[in-house]
Length: 298
Ligand code: ADP
Image (cartoon, rainbow, N blue to C red; front, top):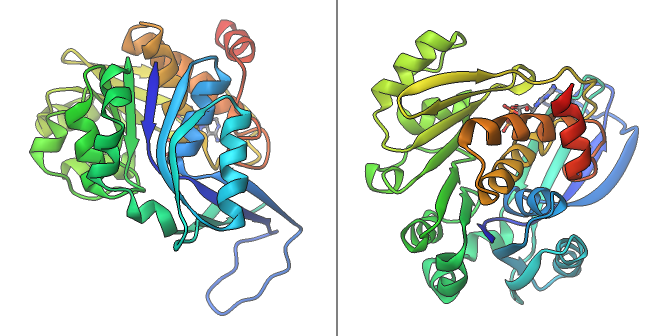
């Protein structure tokens, strides 16, 4: 139903009163470990919403690899295309979260950097048969390109962390999901806060597919069939926004796989992402369908 090509990490999460400045040492108020990585987070978000999800990725041969594989499998994600590379370490994310839910993150790619086009080609049947194929940029571009070419269903691309991209790849994207910073890097157009300037920026970018720009607590903008619509986010008391963008993408994929239109899918995704900010850890508060439906009905 949904195939996600991407990264899986072990997230090492500390909470601190304030993020440390260069040269400063601060004591953490808590420490925990969670499965993370954009690909894995998005897979878990969609699986928790009831979709059948297969994950294509790589772990290292270390103990963390077994931990993250187990976490994905426990959510019902098909991990038959998640191979381990014995000589590599599993990816790690070093996450600091302060009292205002502000975060600062360092990612060490480890085995994620070894996912290549051949690996994705090895999963061709699965990728080609999926209603929705999702990729991000925490794995090599060649793997993403291979996925884009093999996808026959809707190709959803979340180019994060962002880098400038070629027109050939962008031309294969059905739905581009970016925050404002990613929009600027990927399209070379300045992102604006007001919808009408944003509409001109998106039009100037001249991409053939639809674009969803996420705006944090302000929700999202949806560019679809030549028009821009705004989707406000419900007000919540955010504790940790790590994984909010990933929950958005996973929930969008869920709705698209259920054949919802893009605007309705974005409304669903905004509600799911808002709910995901209510606990520490990227996947901890990822919601079930009933929770999203309840919030959307308000
Ligand atoms: P990213 O985390 O990728 O930069 P955003 O910050 O735009 O992405 O957040 C993605 C989505 O998560 C938003 O569209 C919104 O639905 C939700 N979200 C993020 N931060 C908050 C917040 N503080 N309150 C409510 N929802 C939020």
